[in-house]
Image (cartoon, rainbow, N blue to C red; front, side, top):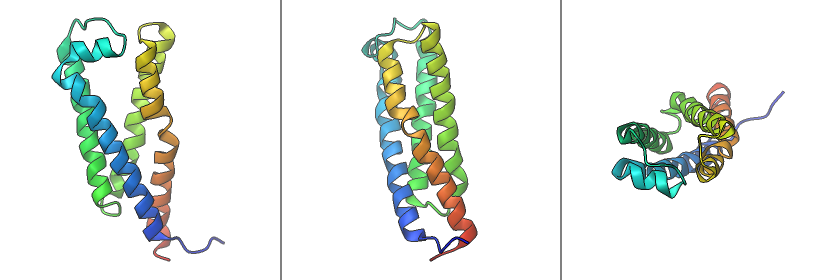
Length: 140
């Protein structure tokens, strides 16, 4: 039988995790929204044929940053949204990794995805499980 769950510590840790993710998403998305060609060049990519597609994807990244911010402000109240962080990062990471393996994604972009997605996914899954556990077990 498990002991009581420390709700305060869990929520505090998850709050910081989601705050960091919000800031990361906003930071990496703004260059692609403002100037898709310069953003592609910064990561070793070619001039995009369809800059609007880059803007659209980066807009989604920015929007997810807003959702991560919302979770960081009210972990318990926004607990149902937590799973969308690891889902979004996993979809992005898989798509970019497959592209890299197939040779159509530059190495610098792949490294960005490792640092902003692959390394974070286990922590975000932990947050999802921990907050659900707190919800089931109650306050210590």
